[in-house]
Amino acid sequence: MYKRVLWFLPALLLIATVMLYPALRTFILSFYRMDLGTSFQAEFAGLSNFARLAVDSRFRGSLWTTIVFTTTTVSIEFLAGLGLALCADTWVQGRSAVRTILLIPWTLPTAVIAVLWAWIFNDQYGILNSVLTRAGIVSSPIPWLANPTTAFWALVVADAWKTTPFVFVILLAGLQAIPGELYEAIEIDGGGAWAKFRMITWPFLARFVFVALVFRVIQAFSVFDLVFVMTGGGPGGRTETLSVYAYQTMMRYLDFSYAAALATATVAALALAALILYWLLIRNREEFS
Amino acid sequence: MKNLARFIVVAFCLFSTAPFLWHVLSSLKDGAEVTQIPPTILPARPTLENYFELFEHRPFLRYWLNSFMIASLSSLLCVVSAAPAAHRLARSSARTRVVASSALLGLAFVPPIVFVFPLYELVRTLGLINHPWGLIFPYAALNLPLSIWLLTGYFRQIPIELEEAASMDGLTPLQTFLTIVLPLARPALATVTVLAFVFSWNEYILALTFMNAEYARTVTVAIATLSGAFIYDIPWGLIAAGVIASSLPLIVLTILFQNRIVAGLTAGSAR
Image (cartoon, rainbow over all chains, first blue to last red; front, side, top):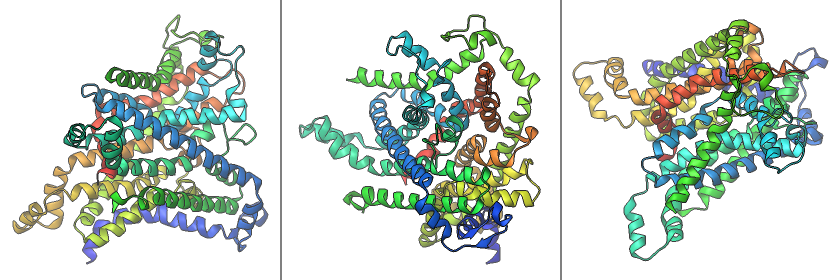
């Protein structure tokens, strides 16, 4: 028996030290107070951190930003990824090259991508303003990252640029797993493109859609690198997401317990989102059972 | 219809590459041209001076080697500890597998921000702040849940008869694992290693928190701070060169291992 444990030992040790213990510590710390005021000694504080969350407008703002960011980026990435996968599915010779080209943005470091896009959106030297003014679409350069709304959309564009390929690759694999004879059967029955999509493609694809969406929703909800580097949560904290707020609370304000409560709240919100997604996509579909 | 589909795909490929290509071109411009308003597209006087500046006058080679060492060792540590666990898991009862898979996926989906502060305490206690192992261990562990999960799926496809035959020939379970199972699982091991390498190379939040000394920084942190370090007169040409130099290993990996990366990404939906 103990020999069997040896096979799991390295993995278990690593996961326990780096993930389980810290997760537990963060959760427990959210019921304590540990900041400058307590000289960084943990003092039990009950639910006071969560009471503070309830009236913290910065928390509400970052929660809302995170939710809007997640729904916007994931919807765009899903629609663009699905459209692209449908377009590329029939292109046998080009598929592999297209997949490689599209995968490159996905593999690049998000922090580096954030720098790359920050420069493209730069009001003076950025290529975007230059192209737009030359084409006569705008008369004077737009300070994209200095305005809350355009800064938010700049983040969305950068995120969609990087992660649409992820959705595309998964959905393309799904499309390729569909047996071609099924489409022929619909053709014989006189069905058109829409009938093919609704009766064959979509039911087959649903599981792939679920996997792609779960991954994307979770990653988008935890977004840190992109926002922290590209806008720093600004201007005026208007693009601050939950992870960025929690990080600032931790490393800038050194309020470790409140940061822990913010992290705990992030996980709770994420779990709720996962549950909703599960309910929408799996529970309501007969095909999965 | 077909042509329209191809046009859309090609247009998106252009959109995917254009921002990066613009940085390639910008990195070849000299200091005066890169801040020219309006910006030029093609460099008028192509030069490699930004790259010389980056590697000769700034410790970029150091950052690059830090990232390379940390990503290599952590992906290796990850696959070495994931493989035996996944192999055992693949041969355990369906019930155990379902419970373990759910736990692994659940762990993989926890937002990294949850681990940052306790890990920081831990790394500091162990004296590993600004030390490569302060990132190698965490990166290996953070990659483990998905790696074990991916490998378990692959090991299950290896016929159990092979292992039974090996044990009848007198091989111990460890020998069977090392000489029969692992060689067969090479493609899956490559997938897991490449994905773990990419993740570790790209990781930002832990690297930013644990590596605060100049000499210990990884490329992601170095590039992100390079642009924040100057309020006036941001050295865009230098930053563009840094963006390219830090992305290059990943582009090479993607081109070489496209099939393995796709296999890893799609494994979850195919099951």
